[in-house]
Length: 436
Image 1 (cartoon, rainbow, N blue to C red):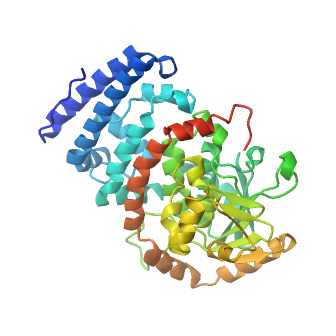
Image 2: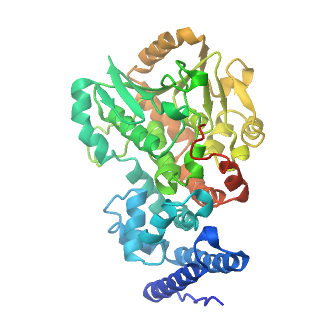
Image 3: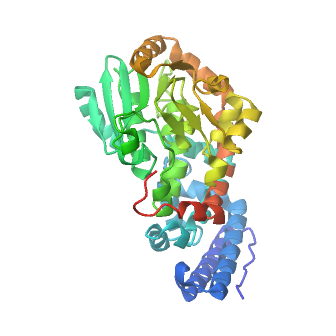
């Protein structure tokens, strides 16, 4: 029988009790053997141990989240990205988050054979985002320019071109275009894609000659779509099956990283400058062929969405079994609550020529007119007053506190969904050789 400690509210006492409980849980899991080899009795014993530990972690965070966050960030003086924050907390508060060795073991396993430590990460980030001070501090830290982008900025300023594994970035005049080149999987999203998109978005926002950003899918090599542009096929289900989709860097990172930067711009340390400068820019999405799942979510943060007449969007979250990022927050606000339920819960696909497409697609043109329409929109959005008005629109439509509160629930329930029996069964269809 698992020993359940009682917390008393004293940080040091409770920290020691939690660490002891995590150690005991680890022994029980080790005794139960690898996840894939457990019999029913061993699986039940492991599940009981994990349930006890997760209950304790939630109870500890309800009492001590503020102290934990302040300790990790040196009283809010050090901005830490999500992965950095988790690492700092693991060091300072052993037992509160999974240790690196267990995380590494899970990372090497297919999704169905993981212990499920992402759920424990979800418990932690749920607590962080539930706290206004900690949550907003983390969101601001996540919108700071990445070191990778800052290192590449001089080259981009000089050449107007950067090539990364999953995207290319080119500047023509005052328009910077990010072309998604994850062509082997129809521009499906994986860890590399998220990292490269954030780098490219940072470069557009940092580059003084870039006034408008554009995101468009590149031409495909897939036999069915060879030579055609595709915007995005959503999350890479093959990678999800293989356990290669990172909870912290992908599922949380895309929402709080490059999507947040497209919507809100960069956060900086220049709060004392005068006049204050808004580190945001207008963005255009150009949709060719389709925007599925995560691709459709992405459209909801753009200032202008241009679509080819033969394209469509869909957000089949209920069918795939996971939560579609912040799509649940944004689609109903920008359309109607009935349409949001129709698309997210029912799986409706909306073609560019349907009347309801106007809720996501601002302009629909024939495929051969896409380039001209992108240029026209970019010229119009380069007007001087656009940035200030974009800032005010975002402030009114989605205050960061509203996004933070949504993320608190998303952080927990997305982690739980990753281990739903339906999700594991569906992604199990995607073998190592499968393609989206």
